[in-house]
Image (cartoon, rainbow, N blue to C red; front, top):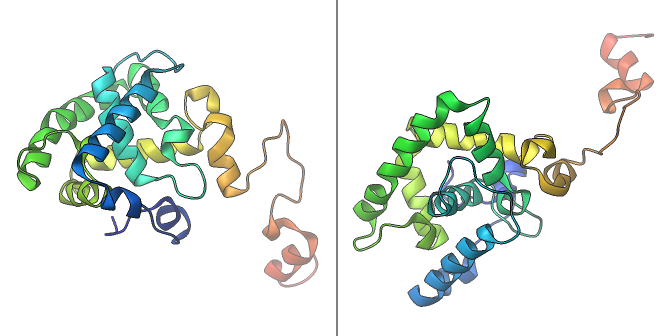
Length: 198
């Protein structure tokens, strides 16, 4: 994980995020965290596995893996709902990893920032510091994979709300696709790749 995580860094090795948050005082950050928790509870699908407090922490982590900058990130894509749904169904075997990670997370936060226990209440740079300290753990590895899957999977699985992940990649939403599928599949490029007529 890089020191300056942003969605652009992660997806396209560009951009940066969080300057306003870093300049905000503790009260403003806590208000923002409370607002984020409130947003999770408003007009959203019911959670099957996570409590609302757990969902706020998971969403905060996902939002550092693929942050919001000039385009939507994991929060807008509803990645938390993909992760929650997957842990209730096809990825049930990964639930202990999340349970253990969420149990340990307040201790990881407290180790680096005395008096703090909520990851979601930290400034982005502080969140990145905590994530860097746990990036070799099964929890973070599983969380990173789940975030990517939730960002780019079909919306029917709970994430990629309004196809924001696909739009980010330039993937169109179509019922069927016809060739050429990409630059590699155009007749001229196929000939060049195959070394002659194709």
